[in-house]
Length: 297
Image 1 (cartoon, rainbow, N blue to C red):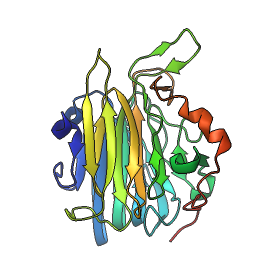
Image 2 (cartoon, rainbow, N blue to C red):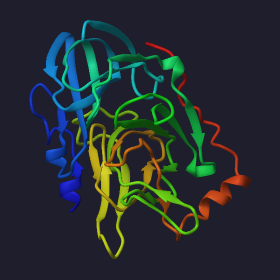
Image 3 (tube, one colour):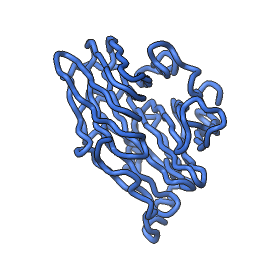
């Protein structure tokens, strides 16, 4: 199971993409992710097909052209340096990207064709979540209430070295409302990781860890040692914690989509561990947060 759901950098490359996870590759219906690595002066043109996408600089800057609109992305030096601007491109479009650096393209199959749009770094809601050793920063750049899409949801999470995030463990595998009022949505999720001090493709680079586990009804068992550029797929089951090793900050890009008519991130905690949220009331947020602010290179 781990071999199917933990995809190290380089194992899914298909030109022009350094990383390509389509719904077919993941074995589900909606969610996808590509990473493009452009040399200085690089250029790629592609068709979006039936997917809506974002163009998100991980390191570097780019110009995105779509439907006659030209969007200049100032980008950032790294995911640990700043919140970035980004571009939205719709389904059934031709897109040209020019620039230099590493760019993530979260995607999902879409029904509606929306207009291409620019998302400014200054408009990205930055949230500090948790407390103590469960403190982390969430950049809600494409959360349901922050940026409009047909189906796509995406956020960035930065976890200081030694901390845990995606904690307490939670799941979103069923569309249901529980007797106690909790709401859960069915969502497919991709985790894309970077680790401070690491570069994609370095087998000796610093590591973090990702846990995914299931229920008696739907068993799944993953404990992945992840390096920069690695992906973990979460088709169902409880996921968390995401563990940052002491001395190395952990970044992950979450890409989510599902069959529901409304964009949501609704999830439910593992009932054995949900009490941990109440413990945060007596703890301070990690003083290393926020790790990044808004701003360009």
